[in-house]
Length: 190
Image (cartoon, rainbow, N blue to C red):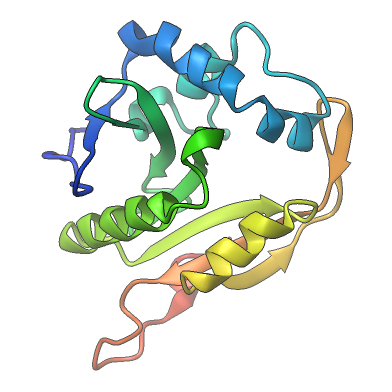
């Protein structure tokens, strides 16, 4: 699949497309964010967590469908990561797999800035829906996504994540809901 460029902008930060060459920096970032992995899987990130971020995809998808986006500060330090799957589950939909901030950069409004810039960028490229999943135990994330206009689609049955079991809440944000015509959401089933 062809690359969409340029990447979106977040004022005061540099937004970059991460690659296999950035795995050491990404691994260090994920280790600094071990609290998130602990919440989801009940264990610290594995030594291959960064590599997995590039390769893990749902059935029928490949790493070609994936963008792992980094947000850096002036010295090049990675302070945020956005992992997305384009055209999933259908062409006009994108799936957010992860929006994660370094613990020292949380609660400053940066997550909101990153997401809103990302959403504007997707809207310019004809994307109609953004979907994501939040584990039910991550109440802060659920409230964050709700505050950005995401709506509950469904609660999935409990499933295992490492040493933990979670209900996953699927959420959607309709990017064309203010369009003059009614958009049929059946074009983007979850």
